[in-house]
Length: 257
Image (cartoon, rainbow, N blue to C red):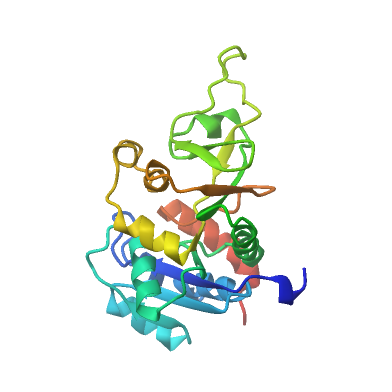
């Protein structure tokens, strides 16, 4: 697709210093660069009009500005990265129809083309408020893991529900088999600014509090979420020391001298 037919979009990367398992996670070294720099570089390669790092910690902001990134200091009271996005969008005066992508600050292996594809998918779905990717599960064990979020779609590709439980449950299938409509949700989000503002204005609902899944707040309030199928589940982010070592190994060949 030519650049003239691509929707302009912004990327905002929420980055917090606090982490119970990996304190200071955005600043951890990955092959000579802080993790947040890898994420920023990949977001910039997506074709985004601008890439902004949103943080509540001056250490992160100072580091980001040193390697050339735009960093916005946001309120320390935000409960989620989405709230941080909404503050940046309001402060920057983004137009209602502007598309903003939430790229997590602990995803140094994210593919630039995935970010661009999600922005384009939301641009093409004027009937939807949010777009987020899904991919087929690779195993029944993954599908049954509560840390892997499941999504169910309608016939038009819109989300019906997200859950940590293995859904849809195949009542008549062999135990342990993987249903054909089992979709693995991937935590990358595209919002229209008006929808982002609407989402941030709502308090967490009952389903969100039960499942601990923020996207259920949108569904509870009648917002429409487009699920974009990806061919494979992207590389994992960094949540544990084991993830950190795995990502370091993956990035080592790309290290510059």
